[in-house]
Image 1 (cartoon, rainbow, N blue to C red):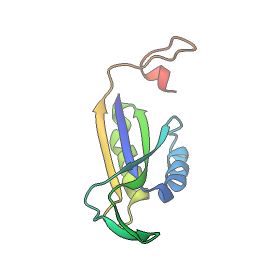
Image 2 (tube, helix red, strand yellow):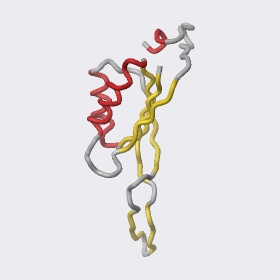
Image 3 (cartoon, rainbow, N blue to C red):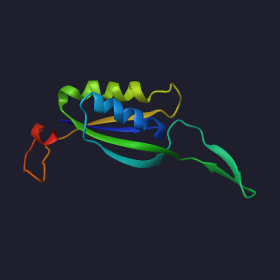
Length: 113
């Protein structure tokens, strides 16, 4: 099993959720986060004070999928969330040793379903 962590633009989340749902991916954890990468900072003025924004609002989508579904899921995320602009985000993939469903005690692939 693999864990995919996708950092995406907030406005792309609803479309991504619908795409993943159509492809049978149901379980996910969503967090509102802020971060920076290659995007340049923005300058602004608030009540006469100049400031620079260095962190941008993003959405972090975490999914655990079977090894066979990693490439398909990552491609769905990339295709759906791409705007061809700096700041589209990243997908991180890491190994998951095991999964336990608390309610039933199921483990492994069965606990993902």
